[in-house]
Amino acid sequence: MIFIDTSVLVAFIVNKDTNHEKAVSIMEEIVAGKHGQAITSEYVFDETVTVVLVRSKSLYLASKSGNLIKESMPVLEVGNHTFEAAWNRFRNQKDTKFSFTDCTILEVVESNHIDKLATFDKEFECSNNFKVVG
Image 1 (cartoon, one colour):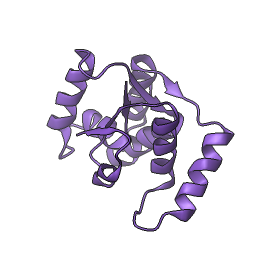
Image 2 (tube, helix red, strand yellow; image 1 turned 90 degrees about the vertical axis):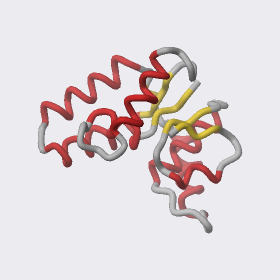
Image 3 (tube, helix red, strand yellow; image 1 turned 180 degrees about the vertical axis):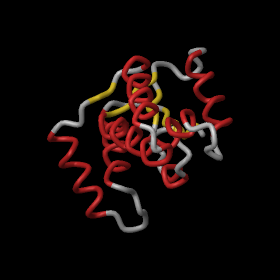
């Protein structure tokens, strides 16, 4: 199973993104089944459609992006337990600068034993709990 982060989704959707070609390659690998089932979370969904809207200034493209995500993979809810664990992780981090959304990703990936994370965010490379694809 592979968790898809905002950075990969936005790069895939926004043709002018510097990581667009890499994101297309990763998504092709996912479609081919190389990484198992793709999954994301409602926080990544929110972040992705918001970033696409801000960058493109197009509600149409942002809505199309949201529909693509919803039709392509499960979007996990971040429940209260995960929210609180992510909040604690966020507040107590010392050597990292993860956003709150990134902390929710870490909690979802670790609690669901997901072995791969598709991201261009280098901060995630410090984890030994999963492989970074990106």
